Image 1 (cartoon, one colour):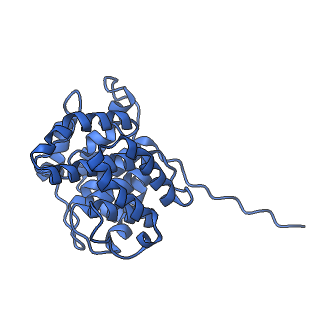
Image 2 (image 1 turned 90 degrees about the vertical axis):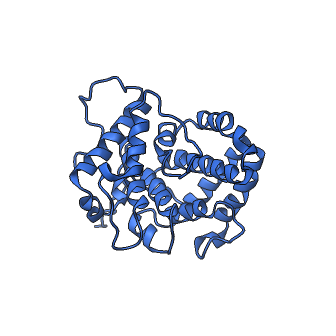
Image 3 (image 1 turned 180 degrees about the horizontal axis):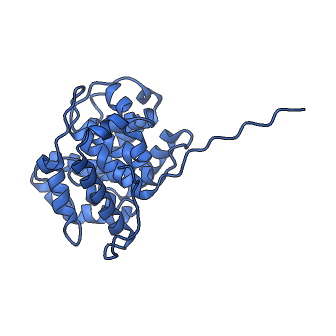
Length: 271
């Protein structure tokens, strides 16, 4: 009598709500990360969280500005439009492109980060974490988006995509001639260590804003499950509650139910 075949193990489906919370929490933890030991401030003491709160309390989440630009600050706006690349692209073209005359180099790089971060989030938020060979799939998605970028931004992003698609991106440092090196490294770490944020952060020395972007991308892809339990437990209960509230607000905004009373659970009960 033959043996019964082993059941095929499938990964659970990750809800959009959990991906939103994973991205917010991952970014928040990554923003405070400086190798062990790390100290993540309570949300009431965090300038990053307060900037998120100010944005999400408005009727329409405002788009990013380039004043003291940080990739972590516009995350609520990017997540609220994570599946609408046309809206993101049009907003960036009409609101940030005119600023090129002030400081072309700085503006182009900041705008390029917003394009590539937004389009990467779009792919990761909709991609099963169990997908085989994610690197070429993500690179194909980003390559397809290039036609919507301004010419100067496309010129900066193209070498990043070409490096990420090459075998040399699997290991070793980002070449010094690759524009937006922090973004390139964040994407590489996210793809190489999809199962655990701690591995993605600890495997290579890095400085901000790379850890924040890794937390942003990896949390969007794998939800809260990729964040180590000890890290989540270390967050004060008030901070966990605040981040969960913000994620639910973003979810309701994205789903078009922002005016509906909070009578249904949309987020995991253990966070």
